[in-house]
Image (tube, rainbow, N blue to C red; front, side, top):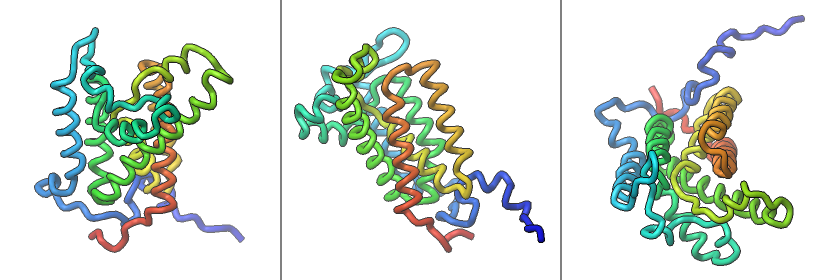
Length: 236
């Protein structure tokens, strides 16, 4: 006796999110601004905060650490000044460290964050964005505490230890994980997002940033799979 396989179960749609009838319904382009308030507000605030405090260094504009340094996350503060560390984890996602990161975060939110907010709602988007930023900072920070300098004392980790960490990219990668989790077969999107981050690391980053990104993406995926049930019965 042979099993019958439905060819439709192997279509491209199975690798894309919200193609199974879940999620809030699309309300049209005219109402789009009303359905993505967080994406709009975040981008406005991020640009308004960055532009006055930016200074040109080389090819890019960078945030002035002297102006906003007290609002930026520093890994040593997790043990040296926990209160300041928690405060900076809350404020940090709004302050991108250079113009390249600001443009990158803006693009990710418009491409993926807006779709997630339309389909899952503003509250869920904010939950994913901020919780994954928080978890990524804690995980990456405490992991570096365990590694550096006692186990592995190299320049790569020394730079990560001494620099400021800030921006919305970790939260965006949390949203990428949540985005992939809504597909019936999420492995394709997860693989693409991981490959993309590896490519960006190779051509541009070459630093500890990817630890933040991957931990945020894994957290966003887990939260969406295990604690955020799909929204059903609301699409036409």
